[in-house]
Length: 76
Image (tube, rainbow, N blue to C red):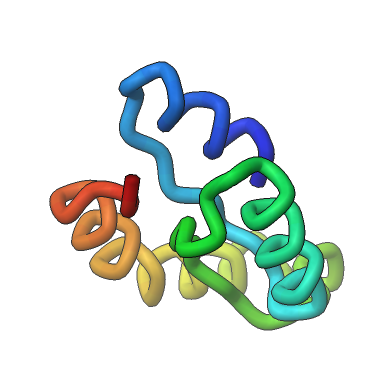
């Protein structure tokens, strides 16, 4: 999350992907770094137990969301 915030602050588009277990942590980190409306994409937790095929399915399900946010940009 912080990497994406720092990249965006440098003008480099970024969309963090987090697992849903870290939703509150991600929102708080964004708030603490001065971008409370910073957007991210969530996937189900845990990631570690997924097979390579499961990871690919998750990526396929998230790609359109990530692309949309990259096109729209993060709130200032």
